[in-house]
Figure 1 (cartoon, rainbow, N blue to C red):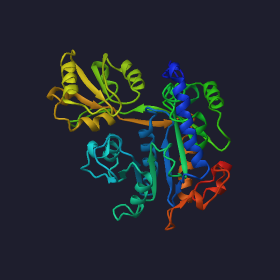
Figure 2: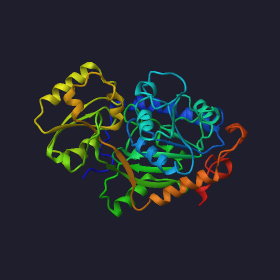
Figure 3: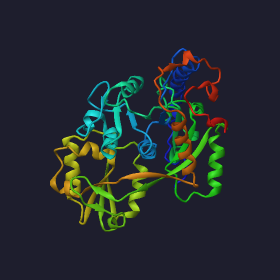
Figure 4: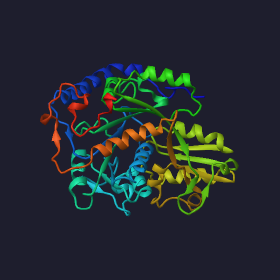
Length: 391
């Protein structure tokens, strides 16, 4: 069984550069803490989901979980920066939007949840204001910020920090020696911390050890989630394959994600054999890339399939260079998360209570200057935010 932090690699020779990088990040955070840089609060439920590490920690499936949770009660919007999109400024996704227009993760989200508003804007404050006031989206009742833990110009009502079990931040170092975007003390801004990608066979003692090691404040809630895989879905036709059925197949796993190790370790035992074609996160597949994939797949023994992620599928679906054989055998692997230790209901109630107690109203957004605070973690100093820290 893999253990916590087992995907971490520290480049110790880069530690001096990490020290310099840390000075800059600490100064920026201090400027927000002192009120020199201003964080806006909005009179609408705003929930941020993010991390403090470079690389995948499972943000998209956790945002999708929140969409499913909130959609029956209010009109939900997801706001992302739209990483590596070709468009500029604020863009509201439509059914016709492509990954080039809005980015691969927002495209994936819009395809799965067509009734959810999905928008992209590198300036989150501007994106929120568009969602709140544009005629197309002015009925929005809750906004989910994707990958916004470091985007401190918005002060969310609930700040969710995701920590990959295999890349625990307590063992990591700042960039460039490690993969931390900011010092470990940044986790104090989180209302909720979720240890993601946890092994399903964790023992009670291991949960207790992890709780102590994370060293959270009393106002912070700690949860554990694990990844579950659904039946594979063909990208270019309507067939599906169960996880049991792929045991007969040789699989080519095609991925352009930040952390493919978890995917590969989960898929390998399920297939007859696994070949990999891995690329950098959000990689734009070129004609040369696809030619190599086509040749690699053609050389494999039958029966065979290609397995890719939903995020990669968003960048592959309109690629004109895929061979017919690849198209006929290309499947996406949908994922969803579930809470461990029967924590799901507790998490759901925190989120739902916050949204119910903080319905949208017509007041103007306030800045940190309008509500001076000496302790940003006291609920009485955060108008429009939930008060579960004192519970």
